[in-house]
Length: 90
Image (tube, rainbow, N blue to C red; front, side, top):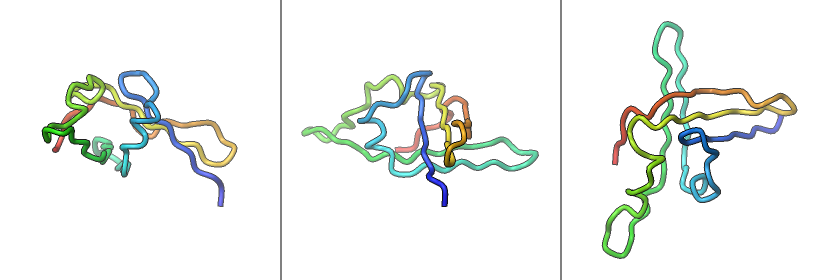
């Protein structure tokens, strides 16, 4: 089976090592004649007061552009989805 690799961009900038460490799951739904949807499940990081430690992270705000690319084997990276964050569930 060929090797699979992925890349994630937030607001046009590559995800940092810290960003990638918090991504638990990526799901991309592509259906003919329907809007494509991507869902990123990220771990919740709380500070000592119980507040979300990344709540001031501007890259994870509504309308921020997110791009997920996939590379299969020796092929080039191909975008799976590229669009704005339309909702955040916490």
